[in-house]
Length: 65
Image (cartoon, rainbow, N blue to C red; front, side):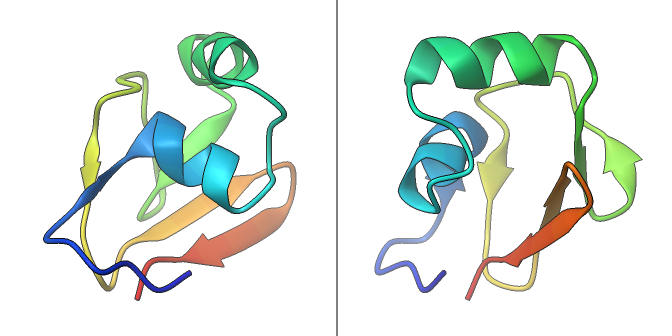
């Protein structure tokens, strides 16, 4: 997904790529360790993603551009 700002927060990114239905769902799956950023489990929903970052959830990989 292409962003027009310097960064996007992880929970907002997951909603934007339709990986989750709501911010509440994003909060739960992130806190349960189901999301990886650049190959490492990420537990912070406010993690700032920048172009080049890779987010993985449920076997799918999403790229920040």
